[in-house]
Image (cartoon, rainbow, N blue to C red):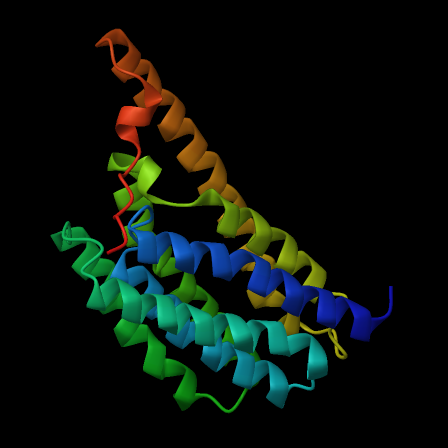
Length: 212
């Protein structure tokens, strides 16, 4: 598969991942954590700029698209108040990420910028992991599954291979994979606990909002 074809495929997978997720947020079935999505959106878009600076070319555009769509989901999460359960631990992750984010600007080396931003993006998973532990059915795993594949596909689409261009998509793919396994384990545990109480899995799922 050519680099250009891999690039188009990665962009297509980005739309495949995000469009159902956005619809799910709008319907109330999925309740994203605003802190996580804000951190991811800003960090992802800046990584996109750093990748372009290091010659990533067309292969970086799926990352840029992800940054834009992620910021939009953060906006939806804030506007719709999707998650009211912001804890002190969430604030710790958010503050650490926000403090770390400007550090990329202090280095002239794109690699260190991407390393810092990848760390920031990983910190962004903190509030979502915490929330998924208590409410594993309020996240849509389809997005994370497709994003795992998308990030793996985006790597061969890169026009220049270096730690600067590869680190972010590779790390994000691994983190998404870990999150998928984590949520599946929590869902299985919650379903077993509810079954002992005489309930069923459907009682754990958020109820969609009715359209007016």
